[in-house]
Image 1: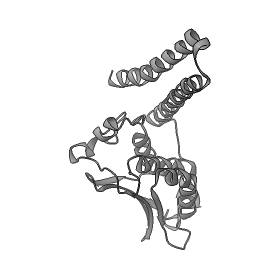
Image 2: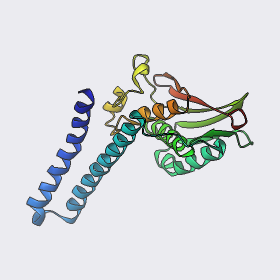
Image 3: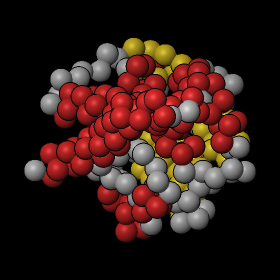
Image 4: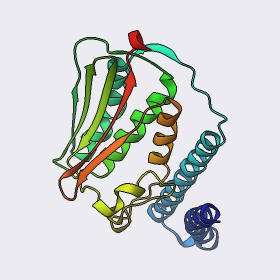
Length: 227
């Protein structure tokens, strides 16, 4: 019931907005200027993209919850994947005025995991960190090798998470008060997907945070030689 309630609310809100702007375009098309028309279309497109992401995340999470996804384990360089994902979001970080740093050893840091699923984990964590880090802040991707394992940490200097909320951040549709007050349009499913994927790999993700100072997510994967 909670899931249906949340989904219904998250679907209705952008749909209602889209319907309102489309009705305006249809009813007042002749009296609207080109600028107004483009403005209404841009807002409608934004809500359409939000719906597309929400539906995509819902499908992905439902497959993970139903155990329909089985990792295809292969040996690959986690350091290389880390650099690839950071390049994917380099322009977003630049536009947001956030410094994106990578701290990784020179060696490849070989692991055995599903490379596609791990890319999804890193993308979700990095996107989340950039979203809640203000201009002038910093997001760091740190990779460390240890005995039989490789650890990844994603740290930001953003708004942080209240202690009372730390136990709930991996729940479906969780949104912090900071996100709600800032008008963030997150689906609230990104971290839930991260946790499900890491559960499939037998890995546990931990989080530490201080309000107004930042947040750190960390997990480990077995080194390929030890797998």
